[in-house]
Structures are given as structure tokens and as C-alpha cells.
Image 1 (tube, rainbow, N blue to C red):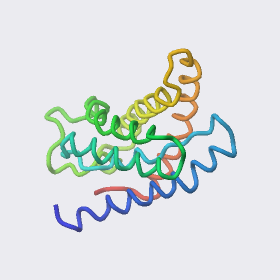
Image 2: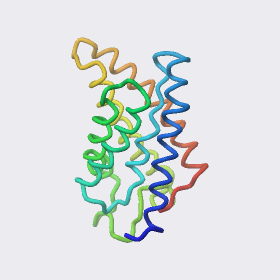
Image 3: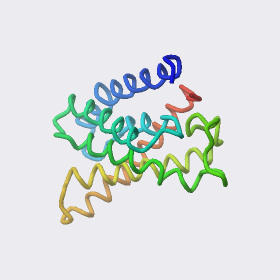
Image 4: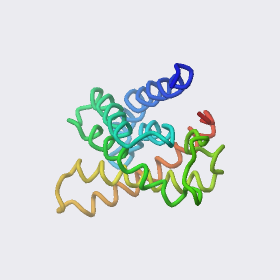
Amino acid sequence: MNSSAITPHVLRFIGLVAVQSLLLNQMSGSIGAYFNVLLYPLFILFLPLQMAAPYLILLGFAVGITVDMFVPSWGIHASAGAFSGFARGLALLPFAPKGGFSSKDPIFSPALMGWQTFLQGTSLFIAMHLLWYFSFSYFSHMFMLEIVKKTAAAWALTMIFVALYTAMFNPKK
């Protein structure tokens, strides 16, 4: 992979971590407990489709731990990021073409899949990430109703931000 292929991913990493840490986490703290928008998982989603799972897990952990540095969440984002790196293949599997994704397919994006398929795959991926995040945030089955309510609210808000981000930046590689 040459440097011109890595540059969009590095910029996406920096930009999503900055938006998550400096804007979205601050808004969550001031607006209320049910305003949770986690946009940084898009970094994992927009990595190349042919990337091996161990690299996805390591990069997911890296983006999560970087977000954790800015908030006192003690590794919850790192855990969710690593899980998302593992689960991305499972979340996108139902939306893969019959022969699977080829090496010509750069990233899972509306340009490649179309908006409907992109939003369906992304919504499953984000739902898995959020459920893991809130499950580890509470770390008890006694809060299952609260976990489900926060996951549902965060999923709806996050999907709005995902659509806006994708429409604004139109990632293709």
C-alpha cells in the first residue's frame, strides 16, 4: 500500500477522532444521557474491504483508545472499536455480492453499493457497535432495559450523522 492510498484513512482517523472527542462527546455531556452519537466507528467501516481481520481489530482498538484518551471512559471505546473491527465482516456479509467483495472494491460506500444497501449495512454495523459499547458501559444484565433504550436512541441519532457525514465527504477510497 503506497502513501497515497493510506492518506485518506489517516485523515479520516484524525478527523473522526477530533469530531468525536471535541464536539460529540461534549454535546452528549451537556444535552443529556440519551444524546449519544458515536461517529468514530466509520473509520473502521471505511477501511478497505479486503483488509484482514487482525488489522481491523488493531485499528479499531487504536481509534477507540484514542477516543478514550479524551474522555474518562477507561477503555470502553477501545473495547467497542476492537469488537467492531472483528464484527465488520459479519455485519457486511449479508450485503456482499454473490462472489464476495473483490480486490477491486475499495471500501463499503454509497459509491460502491448504492445508498440503500450502504445504509442497511451501516445500520447493522453501528447497531452492533453501540450494543457492545453500552453493554460494556453498564457491564450488568440488571440494566438491560437501559442498555436497549440507550442503544436505540444512539442508533437513531448516529445514523442521521452517518448519512450527513457520508453525503458531505463522499468517501470512495
